[in-house]
Amino acid sequence: MQCKVSKFGGTSVADAEMIRKVKAIVAADADRRIVVPSAPGKRSSDDQKVTDLLYLCHEHARQGIAFAEVFTLIAQRYHDIAKGLGVDPGLDRHLNEVKEAIASIARDGGDADYAASRGEFLNGLIIAEFLGAEFFDAAELIHFDERGRFDEDKTYRVICEKLKGVKLAVVPGFYGSLPDGSVKTFSRGGSDITGAVLARGVGASLYENWTDVSGLLMADPRIVDSPKTIQSLTYRELRELAYMGATVLHDEAIFPVRHAGIPVNIRNTNRSDDPGTMIVPGNGSEKHTGTITGIAGRKDFTVIAIEKAMMNSQIGFGRRVLGVLEDHGVSFEHMPSGIDTMSLVVADSQINGKLDDVLEGLRVEVHPDSIEASPSMALIATVGRGMSHIPGMAAKLFEALSQAKVNIRMIDQGSSELNIIVGIHAEDFETAMRAIYKTFVG
Ligand code: ASP
Image: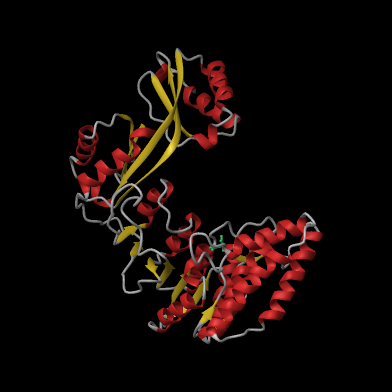
């Protein structure tokens, strides 16, 4: 029996009309047996996400401020949805229970996880009834250990036991439980992780992630005009693009499915005929087509350039440099080096407020001939499994940047030849992105 896990994001389950689309999608394929809804998201750009309102309720309750008004907004959202769908899974009773529990947990100094998780829980109850599916509380399937770390062994064992052979199940996303039974959530956007964990747990043939875009785009549409959709990419390529800022799936959601080799399909609930983007387990035998998969980039990096004659012959030089970063709790992204030079590329979010101390630490530790920090650096990654073993890919990239009059300050190509990262001045970021896209895609 084939089984697909279908996760629907916040905008896909934001109101009754959207949930009707979900039902049509689920009904269109008998293999779609496990449905993972998020909490109702925004219906328009100025709307509120239910999860945000729930966090607000907890915060008010914690501070001893009345939260009845905010809670009424939440209750109204669910009443509208349930009424629009013509179902009632005992909503009033559940809402009262949730309201009381939020107050009492906050009073006892508990955290916001229970409150936040109720967005998915309540939506799950409604959607299960509307789909005629069995409801499973995620607290019984997804487990964390005493220290709040995801408990793989227990979770996969329980999922296997409880969901085996199920015809149609709804499991709310985003949360699970600690050994004492209390609720714990993943980080924000974590329903993606729930879907991936369930897919691995039941050995799904496909993990579908339904959202409001028709897949991952080859470049940021705010910069490049109407970029093409990526039809398929490997987990590794996704990881490279996501790290550089392309968002479509929660970072941590990739690991469970990657581990099990389950493909992921990003689909659009509003355009269910679009094939979307397939994320597949590359098998190492990809064709070297000379094409790229996507481009992504991030601004806000600082480069610390260290120069010291004969540094290459000093044993332990690199360790001392990195030791200074470690002492200040700073992680680095890249470390290109020359004969007498070494540069550290560090995200501003890491170094802000610590730069002077780090520079002083480096002066004391390695006595450089010169040391200089240049802010406002941007990194752009051009990613593609088709680029490897093709001579001239880097030349093509550099030619595009040179034509666009963009000065390259750093180059980094991993040995897998899966991506080429260039460091440029932040003010050239958009120009460089467009130039690379035009050269490789058109
Ligand atoms: N509702 C949660 C959030 O807003 C989780 C999710 O939607 O994936 O972060």
